[in-house]
Length: 327
Image (cartoon, rainbow, N blue to C red; front, side):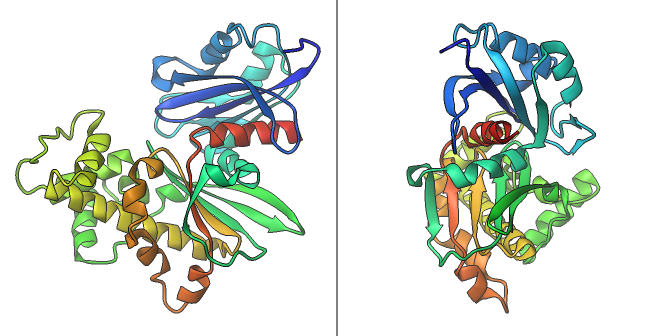
């Protein structure tokens, strides 16, 4: 790496994992020089993670022209309190501490949206080819929490727009989902979409579907419970786990369809987050797309929208780097 080149620093700060990357400016997609993953809750704040990252051999001595961080929470006045982590991230603090030329915060889905125009075919999996038309693109991502975002099409440009739609009210569509909504309301005081479509959300559904002990012997209180539930479901080792995953996929497809309607996403719908690639067989078996399209009288419009799963786990980091390069 040339020390004379002014570099980009990008970050994808999630509830479980934080990715930081040093990038060389290139158009349209910056080139990664060094990428490291950190356990988010293993650190007190972002400043500590950045300081450790910059001591890495590949990043040491780099001159940072622009930095951009996608954070899991609403960004207001250059600061954000993360939704699922007891952190506050402040762009001004980062700027003052490290003297970077420019520092910007984006909502994590806004950053992820910036990656969509530069993703390659091998980095996505199509659930529905559709008939893409010029227009908006929507994005939904279930992981530790649920994120929603969009790319608004404006005279040939795509403008990334943040959203906190994951915390909107959950819309039950049948008796099973009504029972789930009642349980969630009792537990949390209200049922929001993230209570269903996230890792913890899958555990909430698991509690509903298991009238007796889990035949896969899964403990819902353990941190790895969401992964264990989906693994048992895909392997058909527990009928109640399979039902939980079925309900999850059905609700995921329905909410993706809701977002597509709200944004008129004729340019496509992208499924991001850490969960989708891990349950791809369940997403691809048809149930997700049936729930997505079941929106009379607009089934034909939804059937024409391309729907793709993002496979690259570093897409949010790439998007932050793309935004930093534009800045």
